[in-house]
Length: 114
Image (cartoon, rainbow, N blue to C red):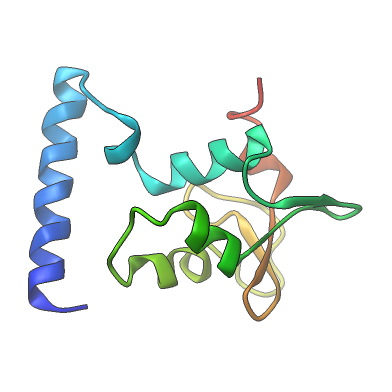
């Protein structure tokens, strides 16, 4: 990630913090985690299989085409549970099935299902 990208991300974070305090969060500036899990819960992203909801990196990139930084490539791997762990946390809620394919932990979706 370039210095300009990092500065841009920092500015966006500062804007999000200010907007949260003012109650002005829109779809475009919500946390990617929330946008991702909401899209999966609504059935807009991923496919439901016997094991749960599976999302590919290709689908993810297409769905979130508004994200232009390399963050799009690192988001799913960064949210992956470590091998041997089975409990989701607020930052780790995906299982890596194979390269570019991820299974969403069912507990991560509970808040977003309506």
